[in-house]
Amino acid sequence: MIKLKSLNKKSGLLVIVLLLALVINIYIINFYTLFESRLSRLLTVLVFFIIFLYYKGYKEIWVLMALSCFLISNFFMMDYEHPICNKLTSLISISGYWFLIYHVIKKVEIGKFNYRLIIIYMLLIIINFYGWYLIFDSIYYLLDDDFQKLIIFAYGTTIITACVVAANYNYKYGLGRSIYFAFFVFAFAISDFCAVLAYYFKFDMLYNLDRPIYLFALCFIVLYVSTKPDTNKNYWIEE
Image (cartoon, rainbow, N blue to C red; front, side, top):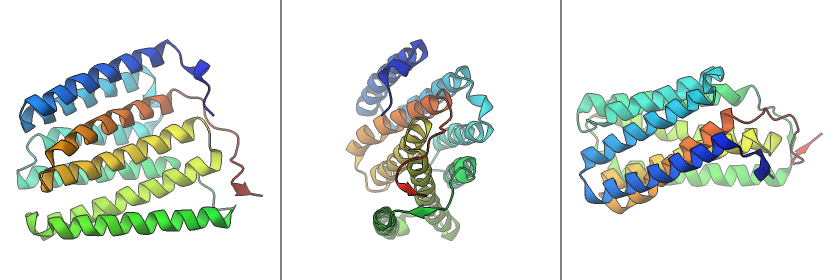
């Protein structure tokens, strides 16, 4: 369990920024156009990127590269309706996820896991792949060309892979940084799925779910880089 006393003045600043960002983004989503909504998202990511650097997140080079990718992808998202921009948005985001995967893949050891945990993993993977297949099948005809269809499919596969790796990392340690990292990856993944549903299916209200989850994800990655490295393994792993 993460101790509340570990929260310091920097964490207090992070909470204030999060609350302000939530209020501003939700207001813009509901009372302005999609362009202003995307702009507020871009500027918010930029603010958290600066906070990330303030927390010395640049020491985690692969996380820095991942967050840089997500910042750049939000820039191209400003003109997502353009065929080139929507492809660059997805390709750069995919790169960001792979940087995150590479960051923790060496920390995840393949050991003797509790068989119940393996069953849970398999069920989650099957459910995620099936859900992504349903979404992909529904928006297939809305995509510009075969290349974009390939990118979207690769995007979904990459997100699921990142979630599996993050879950493994968390189950190895179970405390501190690994929890923040897992929350970050899962929150980003859920946010992306919500954004896809909101945009392609015109479920505009989903933006009110997508954006808060996205903002919490940004908070989690800042908390991740500002927390001491994990040392104790989780009891789920059998020796």
